[in-house]
Length: 156
Figure 1 (tube, one colour):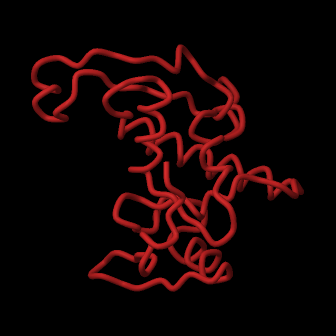
Figure 2: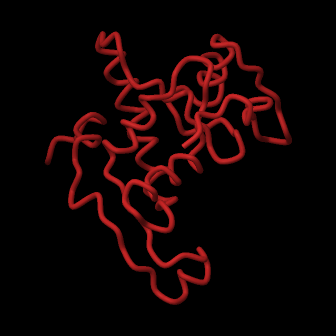
């Protein structure tokens, strides 16, 4: 049986990415776009790593940055989300092994300022880290959101 890849190995596995794809007619109508940039996992990690203390970024802003970098109409929502999850787990894995400087994944929010339950430790861990950096977390229904997150956004 093959050994399972570590999160950091997954982060470094670029496959054939990044690339820009032309969307088919159905996707064009859905996304109102002609081209979509599909980033590499490391591209997403590099963006996440630039978010300083006191700031946050959403996957929406990350997608805009990816699209602009690759001269595409939009950044892929699926891969940007999956790769942010891989980057978060890779950073958590590295920190667990003693790394001092890791990607501050907890500063990356879902679109709308929502905390990501799939990040290491779930909502509670992300909430604790954001609160320690001065953010206030509010609950809206079943979701947890950084209050006034727009005021703290790292703009693309």
